[in-house]
Length: 288
View 1 (cartoon, one colour):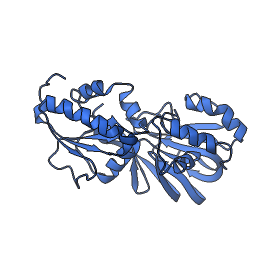
View 2: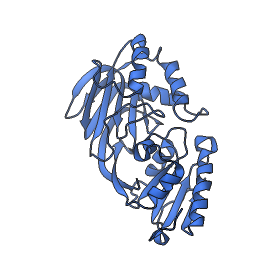
View 3: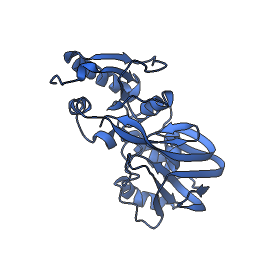
């Protein structure tokens, strides 16, 4: 990596989840360290014990998956310094949105040369999220892989999907927003800032993380056979025009049920009977 003007003014906090990706995050962190050492740049690595605050650092680099990113934004909810996300988990959906298929070396070059840009986030009740909230079937799938050793990409999630797809029972939800007020039985309700979920399922293909809106995709209750029939179409993001699918953009939405709602925030399991979800436009500055 070439030395770049201004890089020596940077003091980077590298926060790593050593368990992410079955150790992949540690391998990525080692590569990053070698590159920064070669460039004589100032950095500190935190693994098991992250600091209480990031005072004194000019930026943070996060190494892990979507779950690590979710932990980061909820640990430092008022963070003002810019940050970057390096792929090191089993689910890296928000990383894919920002960096596409760039190699680690290409991403390092990008992060060290571009200005940080505003990126939206969201709040669900008292918790922050950045990629999305999955309600119903998505939440049940996330719960089913909780605590299990995951394979990289969508493999673990696809296995869980196939196990759940025949027997999951759709539930009634009350949905309230400016765009929609309804009580309906739904297979899943996805409130998305990013496009992908579950390690690569293109749930919200039109979502943009810097437009000040959240994309809502609702799939109505359908039979197990129809779920199997249309799963590949949903996987490819070609489902928005299907008759049993609704799509719209919102700034705020409330989802309620008379049962505990199975849901996830960025892949992290979350349960409540009422979810009040809103967009936080331009919440973070991210190098991408």
